[in-house]
Length: 323
Image (cartoon, rainbow, N blue to C red; front, top):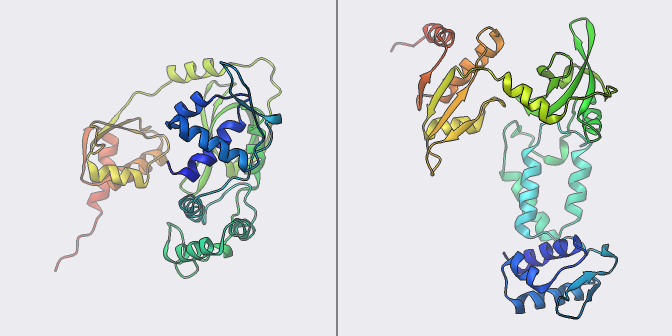
C-alpha cells in the first residue's frame, strides 16, 4: 500500500476507535514501529487531535473522536470511481436525479490535470447501452421507476412490508419479507417470502403501486423463513459443465437465480445446477435461449426433455443459406 493510501486508511481506522496502540497500528497495516510512529506524527500534523496516554498499556485516543481530515483520493481511485459512474449510464438508478449535476460536483473536487484525464477517458471508453454518437456523460439522465426510491427508503427501516401490486385490472396486497431487490435485463425486481401463502414470490417493481411497513405483529423470524424456503427448494433438473468460453458467456449475462461452482483453482471449468419450471412457458423459453447463448463450450449432464424439444424446434427453424 502506498504511503498516501495508508495515511488516509489509517486516519479512518483511528477515527473509528476510542483508543488504539502502536502495536495495533503495526499489526493492522503490517508496518514497523518506526513507520507507525512517523505516520501518527504526520496525521497529528494534519490536524487530527490525538492525545497520548503514558504507561505500560498506554496508547492514543482521538479528542472527542469526531475530527476527521478531508478524505483524499489517489489518481487511480478517482479514475476507478469515474469509470464506475460512466458504466452505469442508461441504467435506472434510484436517487440519481441529475447526472449532469452530480458529475459537475465530482469534477469540482479534483485538480485540472485530473479533470483532463477524466475528459479523455469519457471520450475513449464506451459501455453497453451507450450511444457512440452521443456518449457525453453530462447530457444523460436516469429515470428510475417512481416507486423504487420509496421502496428502498422503506426497506432501510424494515424488511417486513405490505406491498400493493397491479395485477391485470385489479390491485392486490401482499405481506412479505423482502429477500432481495435486484436489477436484471433493464428491470428492477422484488424477491420475497409471502407471509400468508408461505412461498417465494417475485414481482417487477414496475407493477408496484404502494409499499408500507407491515402492520402484522406476529412475524416469522428470518431464520424460520429461510428454513421454510429451504424445505421448498425445487429439485435440480438442469446440470451443465462449462468450459472457459461458456464461463465467459455466463459472466456476460446470466439469470439472477442461476449460479455456478468452479471446479478447478484457475476458474476455467465450472458446474451449473439449477431448476427449470417446464410448466412456465416464459421461463422455459428464456432459459432455453440462455443455454444456447452459452455456446458449444458447455456439456449437458442433465436436462428436461421439454428443453431439448424447444432447442430442436428452434434449430429446425433456422435457415442455412446455400452458396
